[in-house]
Length: 446
Image (cartoon, rainbow, N blue to C red):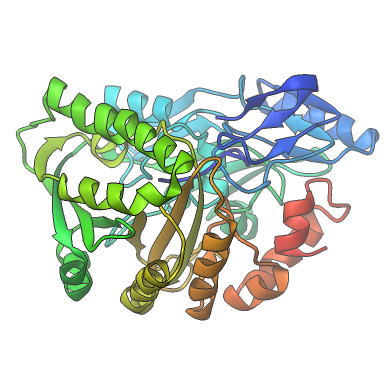
């Protein structure tokens, strides 16, 4: 259950020109909006905003739960800045406009017999929003989308356009791959891709104690391992994705619809609505639901295995912890739920990532485990999230930039060894804070 936008991460317009994110927990009322169709039009819109003294934020599809894209100045929408611009099979890259939805990118790559190496579990975000907030999947050797970027185009506060890669403007490239929209507006991204391959997914229920006892083994033995623990139960559902020689054996049309639409969306929506109306019913429902889990195995092209439709709306908090803290933090979280009055209808999601070299990546410099907690939209989540956050912070956790948290710049400066390098580059590229908003003031400081 990933999050993201461009940056904001499906949002839409409400009354009086208001913009809302996908979860409905963030609303912005920009002074004006623009939907540029090119880099040049984007630069012109930023220069005009500067002349009028307006701040600027770029919004994607609203899948962030934070106010990363909120602004009362100029809101740049992604609607026209879309499309795959170049597929370079020899170089193993694809260049895409920043507002392109991941779904369109994946479908285009598949048509060319190509694929990203890894991805998150939804495809509704824009490519720029997903990377700028740190959207990731799970993987032993690969995880985040930002780590797959090989070049990008950035419009800075004065309307200048920077082409950035490991060779051109390398310092900016280093930081802007995951830049929170604080350094400028990304208009184009180039990703590394590879020939399309097949993945075999093995989904299997497993007791909580067995998953935690075997966690290191399961991560090491599988290219992509993740699991969901169902609060109020001792049950988990595990998923192992590994490359396969084939043949392709996708889920049957009816069985796939039952699993991915009827159960994961339709029935789950009813269950969540019942839990919101009668919270005391949630633990009993969870026990019945967890006993109904069944195993399945299927083989398909990557994006059809990595991603799933998510139609039940929720709010989410996710923390990245040092890999070695995974089991202890999860055991503490389970004990918290058991001793509290919290009624949690959504599973806790556990994924992993290898260390990377992106300064503000949640996996920067360390092998990582991700623990994500969710609550159905409209149900009280604050106390549960706050208690879970205390556990995460005690283990040196880094909050996902696009998901709910209460951390500030003082905490984050300690959590990220290269935090000062990022803020120094921000000072150089955006000294007047053209791209700031309340969220960035909190997490990056002024």
